[in-house]
Image (cartoon, rainbow, N blue to C red; front, side):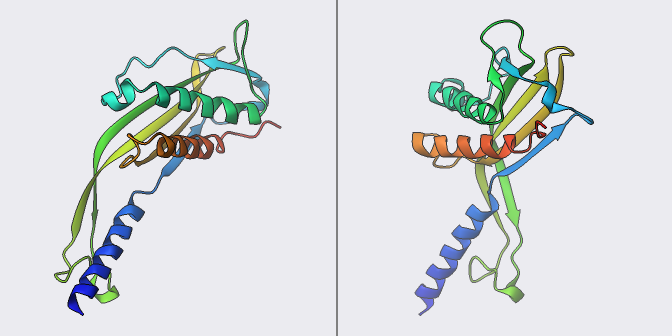
Length: 181
């Protein structure tokens, strides 16, 4: 019976670890912004900052999928990719991968133990962060910034998983754009 209990506790612990690394999304918008004034956008110059990870730096799929997901969501919000002239907005993205630690305390009283000793666990994982900036071309100021962060474990070498993560991140970030009334 003891091995079964230990296996169950390990499975619960594994679920707790994956639950700790759920995607977090947030944004910031310039105060008093009238988003209805914007009609067109284009992509700004490439990021001069390295991502710090060649799995993104040299990954054409990643770049194409991020840009495609953003273009799809902006089109759904009524913004057009500029084909000539100066666009109203410039879109720019930054991506990075960093090592993160997730330390969580366990509490024997509530049965949240990972093992029989009920010790606190520290879990190391790689977290990817995607930041989208929207710049007003008239003022050259960032008027909106959205960011998403999530674990990239088992994502970087799997195109389908990467596509799903990118789509989720972009969808959730751009859902935070001000409405175009």
